[in-house]
Length: 254
Image 1 (spheres, rainbow, N blue to C red):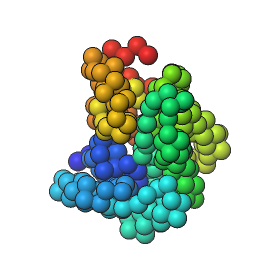
Image 2 (image 1 turned 90 degrees about the vertical axis):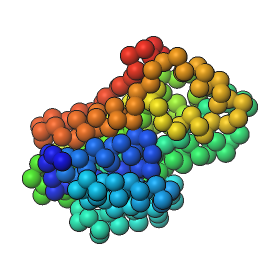
Image 3 (image 1 turned 135 degrees about the horizontal axis):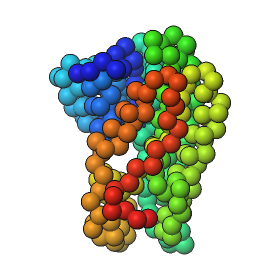
């Protein structure tokens, strides 16, 4: 293990798989204690064991962050169990694609609840702790990292509400940057292109296959590639704030 983040505590949402899992492992590898937040307890506990088996500290927190009380409790449990909060990675997200005219509105509700409300609930609860960490940490900063998507830059047919949520993530990230940066809390927006994760598995039958076929010819990013970008951003010296990172597969043209 390295020690760039020694003494810090990070909270990662959506930590039970994909980018969240890879990010938790990467942060722990640099010395951060990690709070693992998601709904799938068995996966969280397995990940916590993996982190601790490598010499790190981890806390598994089962929570549905679309419920504000559970989001607040997850932040509180992190601080109570690990002592502070220096880094938040808002990674939890869903991508339910398809033309708007035929889409069940429940899919829209789910994307807005997870991609926007969950992020807002966790962030709102975390801000006082991030401010406190920036004020007393040896490194002099705290970090808020929001995972968006290339879909937060480019709107495409069949992705309208997903585009809406990810454009929203970008907007709120920039507003938070302006509000918090003078207090030492950095806001970083990460915008991945195609990544090999579970996201496409949740697209409804009849559309899932077409989406997978459309992206199948491109060698995707791996979750570890995104984790590397996050780790790079949060380990910059205090005078450097990485505000936005767009990272796509080399072959992706859209």
